[in-house]
Length: 113
Image (cartoon, rainbow, N blue to C red; front, side, top):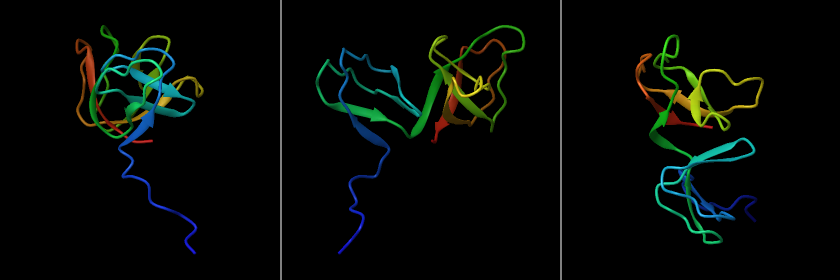
């Protein structure tokens, strides 16, 4: 008798929000960070994407550049990707696949958790 049953590939997982979620919103559930590709109405099952390559917002200005190949974290309060986990307050998104300069408002991330 098998102990484990395959359910799905896992790049997206079922998600039912309590309130409307817009396309492109970042959703944090404890240590799980996902992105919605489509709007999900409240109390309706949709998909939360937890793998793939996405452009996340980042801060701009002096000393905000992010190198390629580094871990980045989602800061819920500031709604942006950062290289600092702030002692676990920010949740791991994945690793950058391209450098983002001080003036870039987004950073490209391969999600992995």
